[in-house]
Amino acid sequence: MFNYGNYVCKKLCRIPILINFITYLNSFLSKNMNAPLINESTKEERLAYIIDKYKCQANCDMCGNCKLLRGHSEEDVFAEYIDGIKEYTEIASHLWK
Image (spheres, rainbow, N blue to C red):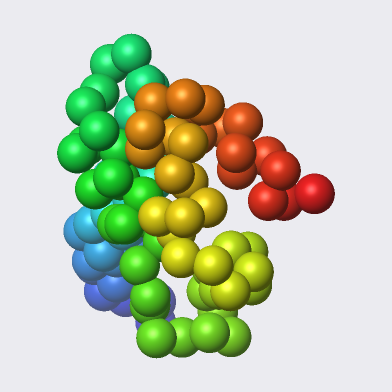
């Protein structure tokens, strides 16, 4: 005989896990997708963003930041962005070519 109550419980018990995952994913994407604009941020905020975004994750196979930066430090590559000369997207678009 089919136990409907047990089936519903197993399905509903997964909802908190999904909600936590969606909340984490949303915060991760919103944090990492939007670089501060030059006219809306200070040099320190832009530097903090770059350091946070390109910090070593100690998992070279999954990360790829080192290959993207081609052996240079993130501060050197994004120096024009940090100094307020070029926007982040201008510099980053050249890295992905």
